[in-house]
Length: 288
Ligand code: NDP
Image (cartoon, rainbow, N blue to C red):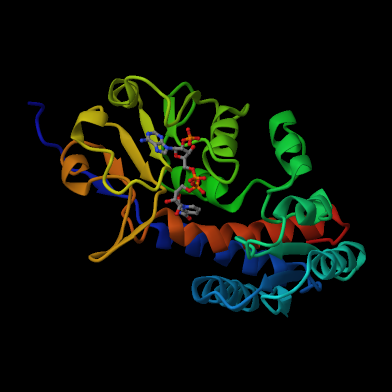
């Protein structure tokens, strides 16, 4: 048994507020240029509506304008493609976000192909992922970027550290593994997934362990090296409320630091969307 240590909780709120405050100041200091985020929501899924509403509310709070395109659930692929294509060529729109998931009859790939990389504030298109790999200016997905911003906010050293990322989706795990390995961040990265053998041992070799599988409480004490930093990205809705991938009982007293769930990484996503929107405006010639 290793000795119990005091585990620091890495709350998302202070990191989020720092990002939003600095964006607000930056926009005001630039003379409040017009920056516009467009969202496209198809159907009336409750959680999606709430996510989109919070994006517009936060945009207004930092001085970013926004337009909201709400389409009925029965929208055809062609209708959706036309809306996105129009936003793509509209020079007054700097960022485009199509709320995922789309209803089953719609093909997200077709839609993503229509979003120019400079306007792809969700960082989901092939061009954005390619720019990430090549280290070119562009947008990193809001969830991977949020993880990086939490590490930075709490001054967690990354250079030379072994980061293990569990989960390899193109939304979270894969881009996060590339981001952490980027020059300047400099982690040595292992990317684990459902076919990984000896997952617990691999996780135990991590200085920074990040789980993004959506399997509630699957990361236990046996996955955590004493003194590791543990970042919980997974979100599972249970009858006891939202829980993460990390079993807090296993992590507290063992990890050096842990993001709570809820209250950790999830909070960062909207702030990083705002950061990407301001960067999108810069990429399109706005001085901010
Ligand atoms: P996906 O379902 O697309 O990907 C899950 C990944 O976990 C896959 O790569 C899968 O491996 C891997 N996995 C599944 N089971 C295991 C296992 N037993 N051992 C190791 N790896 C496993 O999910 P997302 O990436 O979209 O989301 C992951 C989680 O993050 C979800 O809970 C989601 O709700 C949450 N999320 C949180 C956000 C936040 O802001 N905090 C934002 C976005 C998502 P394989 O590829 O082999 O199938």
